[in-house]
Length: 275
Image (cartoon, rainbow, N blue to C red; front, side, top):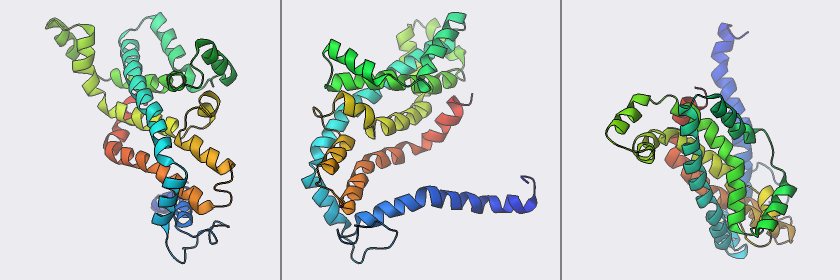
């Protein structure tokens, strides 16, 4: 079937139909519903609004839902999390990639086990309470560090193995220590895979509701938590045009980040994960 000439000709059209169905249709539903009035948006559908009021809905959401405060709360958690995860994960991956002992193989297996092993939420919350970090941004950052370090280690370790060791040896001959070698030689070469990891970690943390609800819920507002709160309180009850307008606002920073880093994403995935 895969070698049939007709199938080879149809493959691009099938791929386009899949993309339109899986991505284009939901995206269209969000945009057109966010541009409708309350009466038209009661029953969300794919029809165009009789009068576009997307900007008015975005403006109303920005003010009524206190989006700026929630945005700052999200940034307070996302930025330190991404920076620490990338730095610590890339340093750990560098060591694991360059050492070939059985101990390092075991440590690598443990390091990436977090990809498939879900964290025990109740235990994590109880531990944070014992440490006095429950309900704090620091506690939330620590939780995300524990969850997503595995992802960075997995991507970066394979990428580091493609970097010639002779570059590091030359720097060591010139008198550079381990930290200087990592900062001057290894880290600049990791930009493609780190761009990929940045997108993934930002996507996970920015949209997270589950862990944030149990750790900082009620004490620190993030964009997903804020949307959950206002929708549950009835402010957006049946106001689908405002809910989807909020979703658009919440997605804009990620879209901008993807637009900036998209050139390096494919290089990072192919250079790290499949090596």
